[in-house]
Structures are given as C-alpha cells and as structure tokens.
Image 1 (cartoon, rainbow, N blue to C red):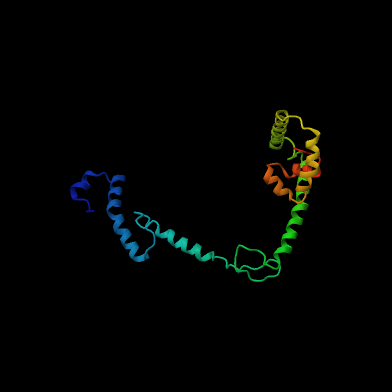
Image 2: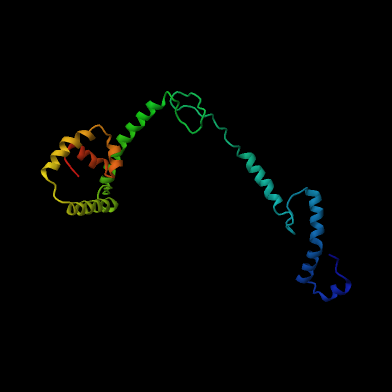
Length: 195
C-alpha cells in the first residue's frame, strides 16, 4: 500500500479515521520488522503468522508428555513372555486361570442377584423377563391345544426309547437342537416333561 497523499490528509479528520488510515499502511511494515527481529513468532497486527505461536505450544506440550514405554506382554501368573499381546496367560497357566475365572463367575452371579433383589430390582421377574415368560407360556398352551391327546402308549415309548437315548447328550446340544431352554431340557431328560 502507498502512503496517503497530501490531498487525502486534508480531507481526513485528524481523529479515528486518520489512525485507521495509518494502521492500514504501517501495520505490514511494522510486522515485517518484528518478524525479522523475532524469527517466526506470531504477528498480532495482521495475524499473518497466527498459527506459528500455536506450533511452539504444541511442540512444548508433546515434549512435556512423553509416551509411556510399553512393557512386553507377559503371563499374569508366572511372568513368561507372551508372543501375542492379546493374551494374558501362557499355555501352562491358562487352564488354572480359567478355573479360577469360572469360580469367580459362579460366586459373583448369585451375589449380584441378591444385591439387586435387596435394592428392589429382580431381573428374573417383571419387565422383559415377564414378557418372555408370558410369550413362552402362551405358545406352549397354543401348541398343547393343537395337539391331539397323547395315548398312554406314547408315554411308555418315550420312557423306554427316547429317554435313555438322550441321557448321554449334553444339555446345551439338546437345547440347540430343539430350540428349548437348557432348564426345560433338564426337565425332559429327568422325565418330568414329555414335550
């Protein structure tokens, strides 16, 4: 930008307008001088190097917070180095760790249910559990009404042929094959339920 000419100065009132005119003309020059003296620091007048000040701050923050050194993966029980960081136990300690984990689950489940029931919340009754139970009972009643009454020969055949055959099958497999719950399959395998 060029400095104001003589005719322009006479037309401008010597107040705020004059100051603005000189700021527009002198600010870039002042910042060029400041940039030469301060070597890459931000320039507040024209804000042409506005992010330069942030870069220094970002770099200093990175220097202050070094990334923590990662320890190599090791077995939690014996400390043996593990080839895979996703694992927590070596092959020798894994079976014992699983037994311990299952024991913890077995102990924590009833304790959690007791705590919830003490708080007045019973996940086995009402809400979603009640709706599922209601739907199952309706379906069973509907199926029972559609079936013809079983003859006593069918019950004898079930007890003599089918019941001994399913005794060796794991309950989980029976449940998957029939679509029934594991608990209901237990009742069938005991002979307490036929269908």
